[in-house]
Length: 317
Ligand code: SF4
Image 1: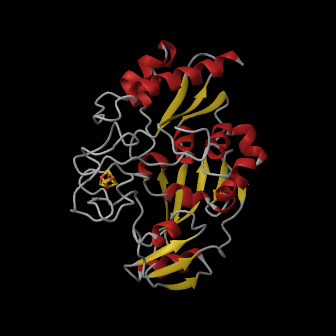
Image 2: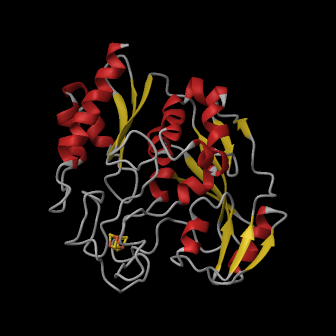
């Protein structure tokens, strides 16, 4: 691991200013992804600003009838919260489908959103990767790409966003609250938070350097039946080949987002209009323009079958 300096911030504004003042600085919270990447020298921050002392670990009702989740609420605490289990069950189900109990005890809400791709070439510093080293190339294109994106990719990068929690947040239309280095706050819809790679695959999300996530806010509960269906190579502690987060209503309408298929949770609202016609109609529209690789075309029928299973589960209970 490369040497780095370290400080503990006392307020969100102080943390944001501390990172913004140094180009090579990063925030540190649970560290479940960043520290691994530092040990592999994929991430080499010169300075860490530890935010774990900040008072961002509460879950509180909003005046609009939703919930405001502090950035440092652990994945375990969020999944177990009775209000989340009752009113936002898709979120609990997505969280417990990810990682392991030990990791969820340490991982935070903000950190979960910020986890980096698990593209195997991103982790191999001997091979080119535009996300790790801009302009170096993409070893995954033409390589082993079974796990990688089928839609929204570019000629620069075909990585997927690996998380589960954000797929549920996308279905729920959550918003991400931040504080910028100048102390001002802003709100980012979850739909705009993660970025498709385009020509800048090294930029994963909409945050500026030094912008700190302070909370994630959920709107009023949607009601309906909540499901999270994750298809993976083994039953636990594996990333999704395809996942489906769904909120289904009794009248046959619903919302649906997919994980494991793109560099961001994949939700096409216009495709949800096809819900009464069944899973194939939804995925035909949601994945219009898909560009699977030689290795991962199976993800498209898998997405249809995963959604069909989710709908069947939601209507049989
Ligand atoms: Fe890097 Fe993206 Fe290519 Fe993977 S797909 S090697 S992350 S540029």
